[in-house]
Length: 227
Image (cartoon, rainbow, N blue to C red):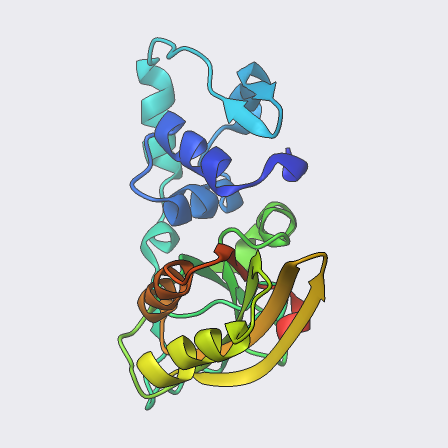
C-alpha cells in the first residue's frame, strides 16, 4: 500500500471513506477510527488504486464508529503566525509551504514537526506513531518566506536562463536561492530553489514559467536536497 501512495490514490480513499478532506482521512487512519480491512477489496491498476463497488452500510458499524469518536479527533493546531509561540519545524523530507495540506507530528525536544500529507514518510508515521499526530492548519501570514524547489525541462535556447530568471525575480519578485542548468542534445534541465510565501504564489510562478516558449515541464520537488 505504501508504494502506491500518491495524490490520485489519496483522493480515491477520501471518496471511498466519505471524508471531507485527505487530512481528515489520514488523521482517522492514524487514530484507528477507520477500518482499513476494506483495503483488501481495492484493485491496483499500475500505480493507481480503484475502489470496489459500494457495499451496504451496516448500522451497527456506524454506531461503533461513533463510540470510538473522541475529543482528540477535533483537535486543531493553527501555526505560522509571526507571533506564534508554538515550537515547530518544517520537515526536510517534504518541505511544506503555506497552503499545503499538512499534519503535525509531536516529537521529544524538537517540538512539532510539520509534514505534508503526501510526504513519503506520512504513511509510516501515521501507522506507527498515530498517538503523536495532531491536525494542523496554516495561519495566514505574508511575512515569512519558505524554501521550495522547481525542476524545469525545455528546449535549449540562447537567453533561456534570462527568460526564466526574469519571470521569477523580475515579474514575480521571488527570491532565487540557487539555480542549476544542464544542457544536452538541445534539451536543458534546470533545478531552481526559490523562496515563496505560500502555495498560491508558487502555483502562479509555475503557470508563468510554463507559458514561456520552449518550456516543456515545470514541476515542484520537495526532498531533503531543497534544504
